[in-house]
Image (cartoon, rainbow, N blue to C red; front, side):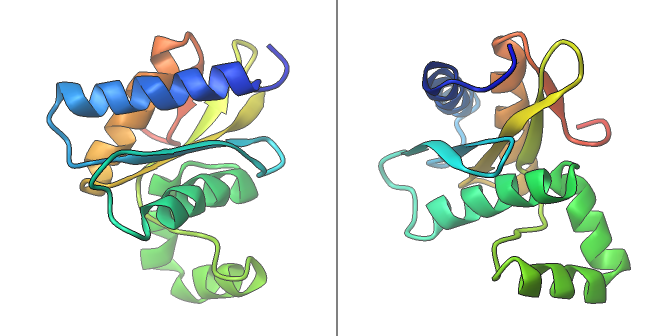
Length: 146
């Protein structure tokens, strides 16, 4: 696979929501972006709050923008807050530096895009994203052990 298709993105979103239901997560929102940071699919469960789509997109966009999972961006935010502030200024406030944004890699390690999940605590969001990506035989790159 050299690019994420709409079909794959929709399947990823469905797998993410199913993973959330399996673990009784709060209502989730999932965003799938291509390698250029463009939105391919967005699904918001009933009951997910108003800003969840923006947060999910921001988690995925940050991962694509810097080439690492948003868990590592959260560490950067703690260690280098001025950098994250500058990054968010450049990105017009689009980066959400908390776990839940995961790079999607093909079998050769190439970045195909990113998935962002929001709705529960960040660790649960990330867990659902990883489960979905791996269920489709793709690589979930959080940048470190999830």
